[in-house]
Length: 249
Image (tube, rainbow, N blue to C red):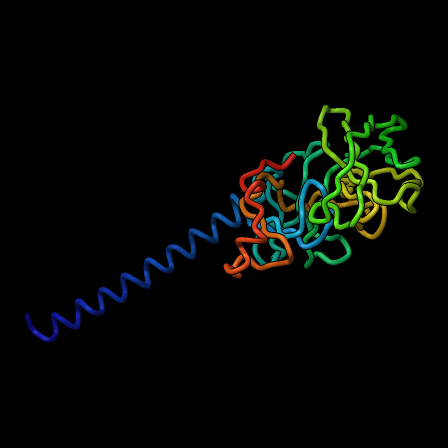
């Protein structure tokens, strides 16, 4: 075999490697843009459903696609394509309306045209109270971020979706609100940690349909103590294996 042949083989091997890497990156980009996006929970606003340190997959196709479905949110088109409506009770990742560079995650409680209000800690939709049943207490700081037992209430929305909420401070500022009329093409979002959530009652406001990124579906990893998944030495004490592959409801 000549020196030229050997050089050609080496060059071909390097070219093949680069081609495989490029193809893998393009495939990852397509999957992230069209199908799934990983998302980590940065705050406690969705406790007890989602905890800080939960890592989950967000289904991108659930509500169709907007410019916010694409990396860096290029302004290529307005509105949504192949869009479908979120349902009450969906846990949704969306772009924070005052600053679309920031991702938020909350639960949809109000659809376009709904009238939403909190009265003495109970959610009202179109002047009808959402059933709210006390189901017990949680005395676990990892779940509640409080060093005392916290009351837990199960809410059941008109479409039958049920989930648990925390009531950390009875009669808090957000337990009684004005009535909100959700505009066309917008949604009303609330966190399950009702007394510790910046949501549509406060700074978030109404969320435009265009800002929806996708529906949160499944937790694939969870670690406590504000640890990074790369800190392997903390896994024995901080991992939450019972949360792995939990479906988000």
